[in-house]
Image 1 (tube, helix red, strand yellow):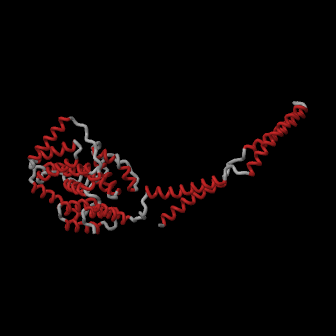
Image 2 (image 1 turned 180 degrees about the vertical axis):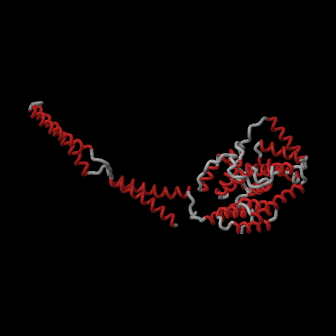
Image 3 (image 1 turned 45 degrees about the horizontal axis):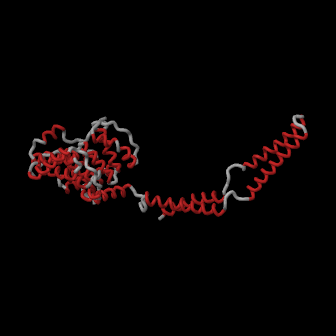
Length: 412
């Protein structure tokens, strides 16, 4: 209520000032008739000087004085009329002043009501973090988001390609246990813009692969869901991104969409940090780096920080410890049980190192997210409590930990 009162008073004051100016009908500078009078009087003096010097005779001097006197009388009459009368009707001025006051005051409040955030009070940092956590938990589901997306025109493809995809759909439907068929179907459905059918086929592939999947599979599944939702990162897509990041913390596409999700739930500060680190890790020219470069300045503006250009692949900040490329390559040759054991082993090693040597808030946050993905909720909660105690004096680190905890369903 205080905001509305102050805003109305400011708008009314501006309108009142304009109304006073309109009603008083002030003119800047002197009237033209006053200048003419000075000129004519100077001309009279010049006539006397010319007559004294013999430049003109008496008859001409008298004729010129008569003409100048006539002009002086006309200019004086105009000046007197200007002083005694108004340059514009009083009623019209008053009506215009009232209309301007109503337009300025009402227009200001109306524009704010449409474009502003009525009722949105000042919030402290902790309140904003809490609201971001609530928004992350209560935001629309994948199905709800898809229902709001306007249908797009299908891409232009050859008729023969459409027939081949129809045949692929039929074959994949008959061979529901064929993982490769589901993978092909996901790819070609995406080519046709059928993103829902594409991510359903991709989910079938991941299910049929029985653990023989990597971070790229979960990242692609999340990306298809995001595209089906018109660019919105739903809770379901977020869960897939968490799985991709648990397997490979340095996976570029997953990091890009993770930052996009943080921006959507109201944490542009964490999103900017995530994107800046992803840019530093590179590589330059990769699709996710190009996507970040086109949006990071706006994210920095929303976060209230000054963006410093980051050279992709510059290596200004080392990547957090994670599985090596050789480990990820060998993981594809393991059985599902061996893959799960490998992931748990990496999580255990990270947990032991943090417990004995300590680490950054980002590493603690990664461990919390990985444990929640593995279903070890109680252990994740214990790690969260330990990390919160270790970084109780670091506000930025606490923000990161609290956001991860809220996204993992651990925050109270």
